[in-house]
Length: 306
Ligand SMILES: [Fe+2]
Ligand SMILES: [Fe+2]
Image (cartoon, rainbow, N blue to C red; front, side, top):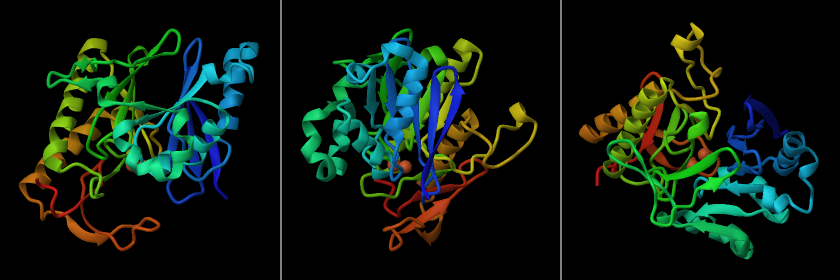
């Protein structure tokens, strides 16, 4: 049975894990003082909207009502893959909530959601922020941050895994949601909608510089929450033990491995072992895979260098 496991990660930040399905996918709820944002919509599990409502009642008490829920609860889809824009997205649309979708990834979702298009707010490239090569967040021309009350959610584009892929940054909490943009132990860069690794490499480099810059600014590592519960190796320094599957977030060293492996593959595209993809419907796809300690399954295809 596929069910949703809800976990409070820190004050006003919650994670929903789709458990028992083929692909332990994660969605997150960020609660500001005035309103809340659900990041991603799970895949096969029913009940994400109900879980969100339970939390909103606890967070906002009587100020959250059925009448004002469309003003207090919105959803952002980080990229156009079905496992992050599934049942939960349908439920939020049916409940009348706004759903933000990166415009560039709309072709991946259009067939399924064409009838609900009027309810979707498309985030164009101009509306999203980006990272500069010195690791700063640069506002987009039409800059569309979401002010939730007390905190501001910055939406940063990071093309690669898909051309519209978004990061969600809450500076006040030192928290970055990355969904699939850098994977979670497993990284998929072999799909037709993925950029070439030549284009992806500078994006990862900018992210790494951003993380370094933030650490220098705050004295703490940014907490990076990914879009899947993969077997993430725990942080030895923090826990004193090396353990798979116990860690909620990714660490700086993981992102460094993403960059190092991207560079190694670019230098030698044949380094990865050839294998089949273990995913419903993609069994026929052959990829190359390589890995290190934290990022242990980096999937790419032969023509990654272009
Ligand atoms: Fe995913
Ligand atoms: Fe994805």
